[in-house]
Image (cartoon, rainbow, N blue to C red; front, side, top):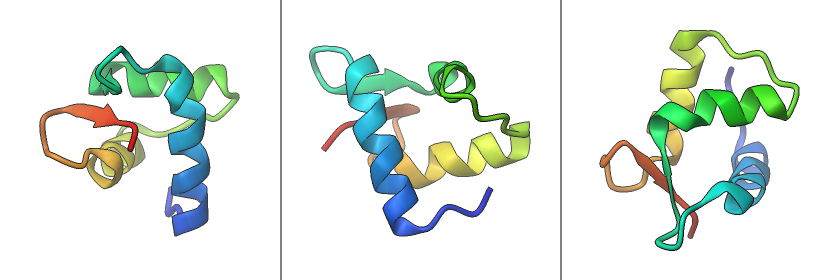
Length: 64
């Protein structure tokens, strides 16, 4: 998908509404969230997105 820094920041802000009380979103939910936002992402691109926003490698994306 090739996101630039600003696009990543926009997605992080959008994901804040889906985060739990610890600020995490399970990686398996990311594709569903992107789909709800109207974005169609190939599995390989989804993996790249998760790796880019998964700050600690724990398979959860955290708002920061």
